[in-house]
Length: 503
Image (cartoon, rainbow, N blue to C red; front, side):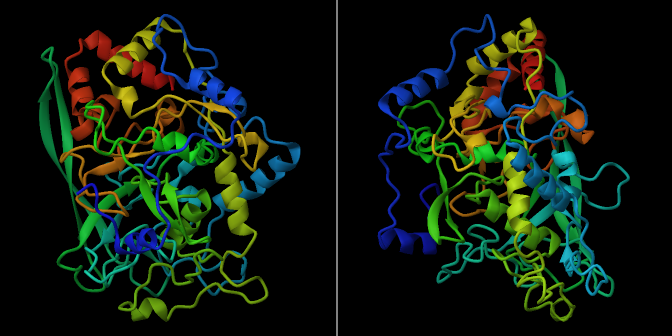
């Protein structure tokens, strides 16, 4: 039900932390600047040529290096020289491979004891998109299973530990299935994917085969999962442009929300709200597949704890996702060193990794004036895709980092939750998001997925093997747009793909 609130958030709202329904206009702009922003972000109606600045998706921060395998790993082009040093230090920590404790490399130990990856770069390979296991691959890389059980009637948790918004983990296995463990400890188990082929006939008779996945867990080392456990597969998202997304004003995102579909267009995007762990205040979620995280810092700390088993000052859990029922895990040594700080990754580790994630640039677009790309853009708009994949925003005038300040950006996302139908449902709520809702992910950089990541697997679990399959999986609020694409001629569908590949 779209109006469901978790108990903690209800308490906070009752206590006065109200979320306004009539959203104010941006407070960071003068009337003159507001008029400029409204004009420049208005959707285009002219598809005969590229729009002004369209080739610069990150504004002045757009990177202009060759579109090769390193295309996602460059810092914003408008960073200061001093900030470049912070970026490079953060990059080194992002690529760092953590080891188990005890170790002679005390600044690098603390891995696990249970974990999904040894470092940030292990999942966000080349800062790009994760993938399901390749054929013949025994281990999962950059993909894992989220675990949770329905909250009890008296459960008032909403990620007060800053790990996962609005979730209650499996009593034994916690919030995600860990398929690796340090020496001397058994991994929790492994994810199993079984695919069913689904034939689809498009309007012109073209035959397409989709693959519908079914997920389960095998080789469970600590007993059975809870009978009512909910499983949700997750791929690692690309890292580019996150700092600019963080500076899209809340007012501009909320202005796009229409939870009751009052305009009758079939699109009823709504916000996910979460509790920011530092201030303990309610903030708009904008990161993660279901917008469960409000800031890059909290997202990074959660990944350190949940994915790698490394504690930080924000999420100080040296045993990571170990639960009370995993006594062997809790008995393992940790990497806490009093002389180095109060956590396994003490300050400034989290600060530098956060800065790195905030300042990764977005590659310059390609072929923006190509006739096929322009035709595909027109078809993309005409099908209604831009209703959720909103092309452009202008970032906050008061952003702390000048590199993020007042930039025209082109993420092609509204960062809201949308019901995408039963076909894509994981049937597992997260925060205020229900089991059929997903955050609209940015499309910038999507055309470089194969170049950077070496594959073309899309959606939250990589079930789509190309962009056409990804579109055809859309349902719910996106059903009309999906059907419009399915009814296009082969030539027009090719143009849409050409447009997406130019992003």
